[in-house]
Image 1: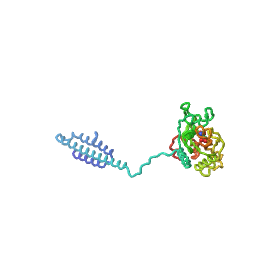
Image 2: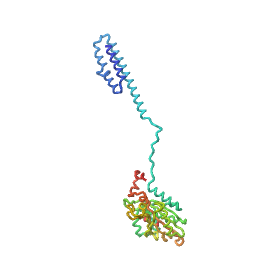
Image 3: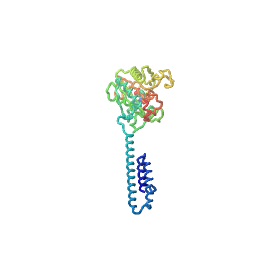
Image 4: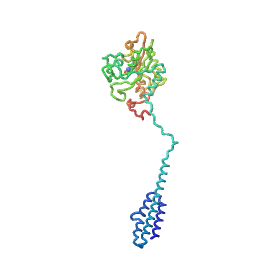
Length: 339
Ligand code: DAH
């Protein structure tokens, strides 16, 4: 019996030393120390041992059990330590790796266009001014020669705060605010947000942007208007750009015109881009109406001036070949990233 016990003990320890993983250890534990394990079986053979030798034998079995348990525990600890070591070496942080770059935002195409327009006009001596988006009816309509019952008021239906206060439909009221200050001569552009009660579609939005322009001085003529705007579009679209003025009507200018530029895609031959016209409409303009000058305290006998209004989105859509205005307002970084 003693030999048998010794054999079990040595075999178990040898197996433990060879065991590759925790599973193998567990199997050894079950087959040696378990309920039906080898040590149990040997205890069952106790009846064959002489009664006086039984306590001694029982002790021997216990010693063997303890020795095997110790070895099992040791092996388990060693395996766990090794596993941890491997895990740590695998998860080691390489502090020399370059940091992952945060994605920073990009300028909105409208912003890029506006900055370009501002650069061109400030280069010609214009200053950039701003006016309020919530405006008095007087500045938005009345002082621009659009009296209460004028049909232009219908075309520019907007959101009213009170009967006399509204969201401005155009940046033209900034002209009036500048003229009222009385610092002549004036050479200004006024970019800003405007509002109209329009449904959203590919070319309309209840809120969009305009860039107003105005020059007031002694002896300003339509030639100044033409030269200034020609210089502007040649810088914006390229030096071969030609301009064409078509008579139009705005209440606050006389005479008034719309200005077209030769298509900067086909050079004027006619293409898909200019819908075969060769020309693209880009702004409204005219000589400031004497009545408008007078209402703002400027003597039309001494001073004259020109004004123009540009749709910022319109220029952006043209320049960047975007075919739906809604894309400009969706704030989708994948769209903005393309420019
Ligand atoms: N305010 C006009 C509009 O919203 C645009 C405009 C036309 C402005 C002619 C001007 C101008 O200053 O002279 O349709």
